[in-house]
Amino acid sequence: MVQVYNDGNTLAQPNLFSFVTLIDSIVRSKTKRAAEKAESVLFEMYDEYKDGNLDVKPNAKLVSIVIECWQKSGENDAGERAEALLNWLIDVNEVEKDGEFMPNEFTFTSTISAWAKTRKFGKAAKARSILLKMTEMQENGVIRAKPNTHAYTAVINSCAYCENDLLEKRDALQIAVKTYKELVASTHAKPNQVTFATLLTALRNLMPADEKRAAAAKTVFQHCADAGLVTELVLRRLQSTLNADQLIGVVGRDAVSSHGTVDTANLPKSWTENAVHERR
Image 1 (cartoon, rainbow, N blue to C red):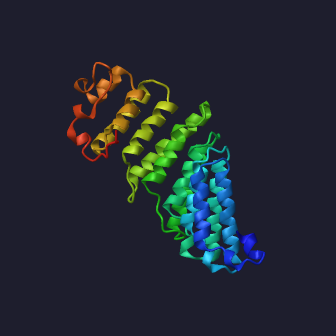
Image 2: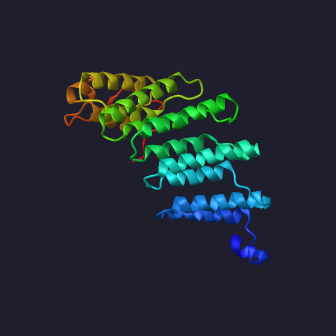
Image 3: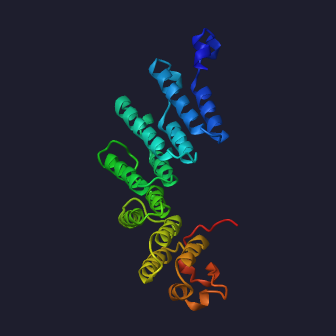
């Protein structure tokens, strides 16, 4: 596109629409190396803008779309590449001092999720570090976006599916619990039903099947019930974390079927009144 224009075809001068359309088509293609190609176009777009073509000025929203593409790419280095792109945007925002380049909630959360979906050791710590960076930048007035429920939950999700190594699992459990406690204490975000389901998954995957895990799961479920956010997903995660006797001890014998499952219809209405229930 740019080369054709540089070769003398003035009708081929790139504009914002042409670049955005190209990136969108690459992202939607879901082909191998789509994220790398979209990132290359993004950088080309910024270079054109810096060379004086003000009509192709990128923004944080477009960068976030490319980061999300890395998140969904399945590439082994998706976490590193997404974080590198986030850091590039942070640097550009510092240089340009233009609100359109300011990273937002989606930018940070997509980067955290990119780490969560990798199979790299230490991914929980990496995800946590991005959340802390977001918090620090917001408190220092560099960005406006505060860590939201999705950002905290994405960190917990990175912990839930870490590699099967004892030290890795120990560290991930600590990060998951600490992040959850910070979310509970937050003045601008609170756990939702996905948070509770994700934390129960982390407890199931990171702790041995003993009474300590059962007690932790019971506490998390009680928080969920108190918030009125119990859903079928939360119940499935609870059922997979507890044995039959432990499950009865948490939800009551009448709520557990002969097959060992729990239906939201058999629970107190207050436990589910604020939940957005999954579509069947």
